Length: 310
Length: 276
Image (cartoon, rainbow over the protein chains, first blue to last red):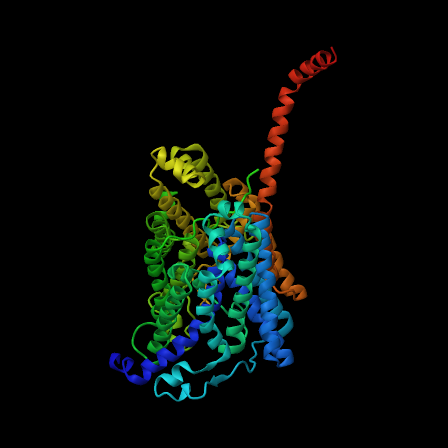
């Protein structure tokens, strides 16, 4: 039984599905990283993902146009992000709890629309795997890395892009300044509010895409509470990744590999109760959170609204 | 209260211990490792639900279900001697009274005891509390454990007063109907004051019952209430700043009014002097 888990075929299976499963965490996590680096904790990721997932699914189901589906998710996620920015930056509301509010809103809203507009669980034909010429012909590695769908590729491309923006551009410098020392940034003429509006809205857009990656690329269905805690895990992975894009990638891969392993444990009929297998990734996340928090210091101004003196 | 509980059978105590550790673990993680409690409790939720699913499908499943092919994941019905008494002919059970008593007890604990004073101090200003010699980590962990125990009590009351058995639909919301998240909303709506929670909880309880009726009568999905609850949370926390400002302004006004007689006496003199 255990030996069967170590066979080449199963290991390849775990790698392939692990890489695919990391996709939503990457989108949502990178968006959240931007928000937190600028000092805003957005716990509404889960809700943003749910409405994004529904918008994308509904658009594709009605029009059959995948680009339109993606756009719908971007617009809806962006609007949710904008609302979060307004509440946490302009109204200076407590971020943890307002995020829970947006989560409940997204959970209820997506379910409400699902029940009134669709009624039953349906499927759509979403993004198909695109094999990259030449690269996908590499034995063993080719099918793992270069035979995925478009949203998977862009998720992984987003990691170096996000890292570059954060560390090598003026915008990135402003984001980090605003998250570490908003008073100093403000005195140098950086608009704290504008930077935070940009990052939190961007976070909403990316969360929307994360939802779409589930409903029109990986699973191709929509149902009540489709994300089931995935958005919260993405937030936890931001902590785990030490607020860096590459760290987030490592965390997302680790988490989704364990999840893939857990699925294979069940498929192979290894005598561990499936409930305990499902628990594994969550236990791992808690352990990872404990380790991560000791290792790196969070952005100094995280969760603190900025009040301009005078 | 302690006597009452000891007369209940084991499952309820187990549930309470489980819930207490459910609140206790994130509390310890928060206190000693500074792990964000919202994230750790969301993870604990998933772990607890899976543990419950495991128990209900195996060790504590109804023996009758074990023999049937359907194997519905639920326990046997508890003996009626253990069910909470009801105010006949309504469905109101003793759990409601327990809940109100608990709210009062929490009020007394938080506002009338030293322990409560320390808990509130730690929440308002951990740095100053540490400086004043309060063990911040211990009080954070303790308040989370107490909160977990109360949540466990909510589950106990749900079993002994409403369903008389434990069951699951596989998700976190099946048995409780998202009571936990609605509880957060009620607490916020009650201005995070135990006594304020009483009317808030009845208000949201009424909303939820109304939503179920609405769904059956005119097919408005009950998800509408979840949506509205989300908006309530957002609005309540959004208006906090405004409410604080108004309270401050009012306090300033009262202070000015108290000084008024003096200022009335002074100002004509001032004017005299100015004209002179």
